[in-house]
Image 1 (cartoon, rainbow, N blue to C red):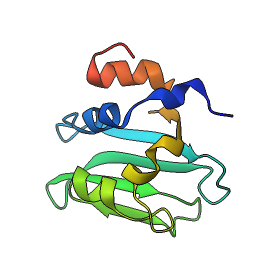
Image 2 (image 1 turned 60 degrees about the vertical axis):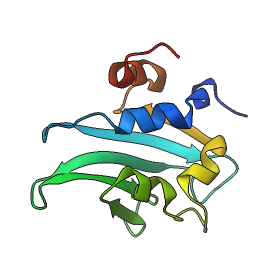
Image 3 (image 1 turned 180 degrees about the vertical axis):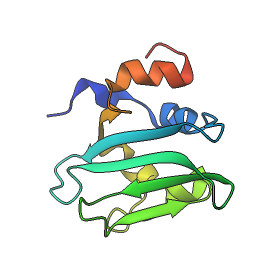
Image 4 (image 1 turned 90 degrees about the horizontal axis):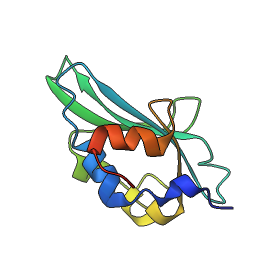
Length: 117
């Protein structure tokens, strides 16, 4: 069953990830991939890494931390084939966004991109 909050478009997620962290904010998104036991509780986000002096985009795909990946750009992040040979772009229509920053995804999305869904 597809939850209503899955109607977040990829364009909206791209816009959310364009949010400037200003070196002090982070974005954390809890999501799952429909009909996938392997990707039923995953994380993605954006944060500033002081050591390297810029933001990174990341995935945390398993709770054991063995499938964690960092990328320097949104394009590399969204096109990385980390979902059994597919990218976030390719699987987006099967993604359920459960939470954004621990909050209701629709409400939190408005905070980042300033539009009504």
